[in-house]
Amino acid sequence: EAQVTQNPRYLITVTGKKLTVTCSQNMNHEYMSWYRQDPGLGLRQIYYSMNVEATDKGDVPEGYKVSRKEKRNFPLILESPSPNQTSLYFCASSPRAPSGANVLTFGAGSRLTVL
Amino acid sequence: QKEVEQNSGPLSVPEGAIASLNCTYSDRVSQSFFWYRQYSGKSPELIMSIYSNGDKEDGRFTAQLNKASQYVSLLIRDSQPSDSATYLCAVTRNSGNTPLVFGKGTRLSVIA
Image 1 (cartoon, helix red, strand yellow):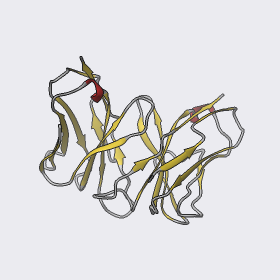
Image 2 (cartoon, chains in turn cyan, orange):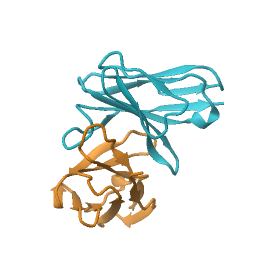
Image 3 (tube, one colour):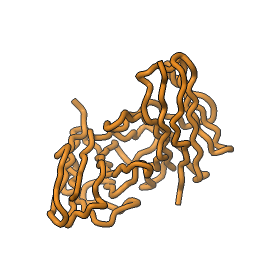
């Protein structure tokens, strides 16, 4: 089944404890992206990747890191999480940058709470 | 900053009625327009895309695009309680690495 898989789906952690949210897609998509979703603020892009070893900042990159060493994986790293990073996170991918027929497919989401 | 504006709602309609969801965008060179449906706590799922001015129909859903007015809408005919969700409008330029910009969504409630 074609899908985007995120892990963990739920996580409660404490301020400052490094964590990684993994994202993997099995559709050979070039484009991958991370979003966070907060009440009243909608979906905001954190980072995106046009292809392997090509990553770029989105609208809210502060406090996050990403890497794209393989085409299928795009992990989101929080080096020192803070409570304002408590959010619902979505990974998404598309064949190429979203446009026309290049439609984004979303993962199921990861709900992160930082105490 | 490119913006996509939606009325946050909630928009309440009775079962069987037509729900009309609206979206305006600021980037005049936008080329592709998408409507996603998101149930509470779930991920967005694509329901419609439209690229040319006019109407595009898919079952009970009709997307309408007016590039001159920078306006895109989604009509849901014969609304069902299962249509109750947040509807996200998303817009992109179709060029290089320009991002897909999402509106904040409109919450639709269909009352049985």
